Image (cartoon, rainbow, N blue to C red):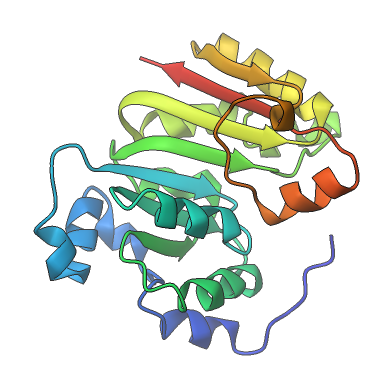
Length: 220
């Protein structure tokens, strides 16, 4: 996929209250970040508040809809490319949500951003990196699963959606090897009772007749 450059993307990101310019400074303190950003919401803080992250959030549709649907959960979108993330920022500016934030960061270094604070990780339509020599780049490779270990707070939950059956099969194998329980698995999530918020890609693929593979895995 050709990445389109967006003029002044960095400036647009930095000017938004939804963008965290220096996420490393909040490592181990993400609850404080949300608490400090909105004093009214802070009064509603409870021990049950959880933090969910989406790695490769793209233009943000999925995470924004999740934040609207679940106001009692904090959501953080992670995207490597500024020109993509700026589109998510543009969308969220019109929503006036207080339980969502975005960072521009490489997933390989997420252990510099989070320290046992995350409850759930979403991996939606990640790049399959089909060639064997690129295996380590897959977000469900042993390399990444090892990085995720230090992000989670208690029980570890990963939710994956993909149209790529080979990546899906690979991921299920890696999840199992890493000690995850395959809790919910579907080769056609549209024809199940699995609660779902669709991404931009998912809507596109479904119109083309593609079946969406879904996995929810848990490790205690």
